[in-house]
Image 1 (cartoon, rainbow, N blue to C red):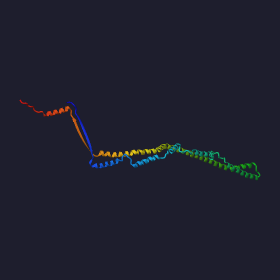
Image 2 (cartoon, rainbow, N blue to C red; image 1 turned 180 degrees about the vertical axis):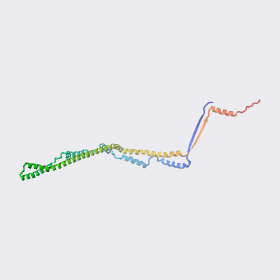
Image 3 (cartoon, rainbow, N blue to C red; image 1 turned 30 degrees about the vertical axis):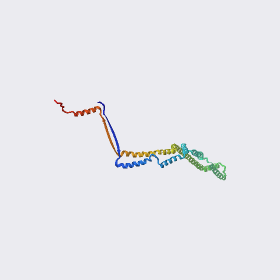
Length: 289
């Protein structure tokens, strides 16, 4: 009379297309079916284009030697300081030449042409004064010598003073020229150093650019080969995305559920007992006196 009860349920469902949309859906599905035949493959035109890309990549000239040479050149300064020696030499020639000597003051009062002029002037003045003293019968006297000395000094002093001022001015101007030339030279050298530094920096960047350039052809070929897979895969993905919403959105779902219960022996006995009790008379049964 023991045992246990059990219950089992079976469900089933079906999808019926939404009637007003069934025509459009059928047309769409027919269109997709027509496209699905070409999905996953490349058209002849597209395949030819990819072949052309790969061919162009394979036929790309080898620029590696030029790239390597240019990069190394930039890393070495790019020739920006090639003329530094000539720039320094120009300053050296200026400083060591007549301008440099004048700038030091070595030429002040050291003018050979002036000395000849002074000698001529002294001789002319001496002759004139001596002639005058001789005419007076006093040539060779102390007064004659003093007159010559004074006359020569008075004549030469302004010339010597003017030349001294000129030599001093020339020395100052020469010193300024050397100073300015030095500044210009150092400015040029600083400029070439800055250019060399800039070229070096560009050279560092050229290393990466050079690698990209060296890999440009194989990268293009890899990309083209990848498209051979990506394009068909994209077509299939697009079609799948078009079909899935249609299947999910349209139609009516019909569901059916069947349940079966299995009673235990005790439950069955209790049910039979209740049935028999309902049939039993509610008043006492008489079997006679």
